[in-house]
Length: 479
Image (tube, rainbow, N blue to C red):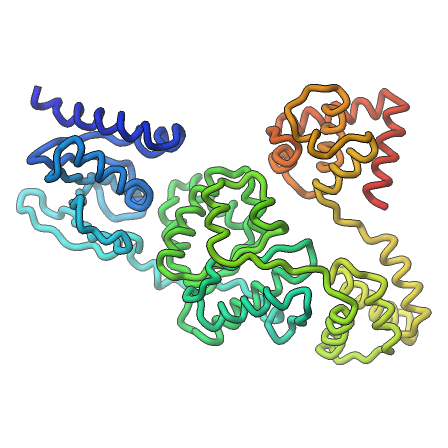
């Protein structure tokens, strides 16, 4: 009966824990734990990996401490037995003694790994977050040198964001702007400003490790680490970055496992006073498909928007680019460009490059007439970037439905069909994944989106009147 005592104690602990955590969290983080032994009021539990242990330490240690005390009394203690994975040079499990009181949560515990079980000798492993030799590898920052503060034109549209960014670059991880989140529509300077901060940090603090990465690259790296069974290496790599810049965080929507690991990395960096810089196409409150705990952390620092630049700022942007390229064109042409393209700085700069190219190739001087000819064609043939929200609005306006009804669970035929049409055009006119489209169109899964697209395609082929409806909506979306 005494041999089974540790099993009974752990079962009692689990019954308490189960009432205090989410069902999915319980299945993920507590069901895989195995009780090993109970000796002298010390319960030993075995966990699958070092990463697993670190997660328990960070997220559930208070709950575990209270539970152990309740079951074993005030002198009760918990000991972890960790099965080492391939990222460590060990062949067997090792134990971590963890007292249930007077532990500073901000410090990582030291661990002891047995060398000779018969003699009981051991050596100390330093901070378990660090893989031996990892700091010696060269980390490419992936920063673009031309995206500096010097080339970033300040205006009323971006003054707050730029000021906050410069403050962070002067004192990364030590200001109240951590994380610093920039949000805006496409082409208004989020990426430029994020790179500028990274470049300025490298100028001020050459010894700091700065990394810029697009969220899709982060996702692919994580998938690869799962495939190769080296998630720990992936996590440890990101935990050693001093300034982490993640672009287009909205692409993490619907990817629960990637969000879990990013949540862990975020917490470690933030607690270590490392700087996080994030960009998004929407403010945190409007991001769909993101875990609430992650969204709450995005709100810890500062969220700053970059708005559409006014006319004077657009003129300044064009003049700065011309100055950097050593080109002079008439003022009236600059004004015409700034008046013609108003919502996307990247598109405006593209029009300027096209105008210069036309002048050079055709050996014509840059004047207002040439600008008018080129801009009319450029604006007309530029593919308009549309969002899922905009598509939903156009579809609902066409069918005379409130937009909020599209995202309800109703099965009314007209609403279901409008939702399917919105899904069809979202797939056609945006780069969003099926999962993202489903999340924004009534919180549906990717299979529902795929079915909707096939249904609409079939109706277009077989129903002449419906085909007319779809063509009309398509024109309204692209006009």
